[in-house]
Image (cartoon, rainbow, N blue to C red; front, side):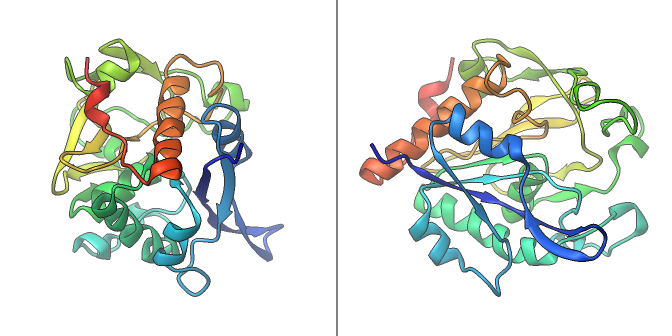
Length: 260
């Protein structure tokens, strides 16, 4: 049986500090293949190479991955500062219109970390450049030292809206997650439903209210240990089902069926 194709949005890097590559984390592909049950396809996120139309015709859904570069603040009407960090404007130019097109058509996507932020910006929202500098907020960044296991360890709770989409999906209103991000939602975009928060109030889980398809996004990194983690597994399983629904019938996945 042919598996649904998931376009994994890649990031641009310099390999060995000199060779430019488009790359995607291995654990993203493993989560898509092993948990979602789909075929991973790495996408070079650059409008000179691919178009939104081509991507939507080729793929059944999209994984909007994390990455070190941030969405350029010009995309939400602000000037860049040192606090905003690095950028990948080629990725912005593909992913932001791709999100809007998927919302309109009902084609599924799952946003992770930067992808979570991209969805908010695509829908007209804005971002804080460094949430740890805000009064009352904690440091959500990846620990600078330690093993991968230590960097991806579960570090804080996320509380979901009672009876909401994530509550129903996780069968719990509180879960433990990792945290490896510096930026966060400042102003929620149009129809962005914030469905989960960290203890300090930072938005951690969203979907697009009223959208025809699967639009779930999370600020943490569920691709880590996705096959075994009780929070990651249902997220990727539901995303895989949404992609199967789209591949089989071009029918959007109704996220309201997940509500508790």
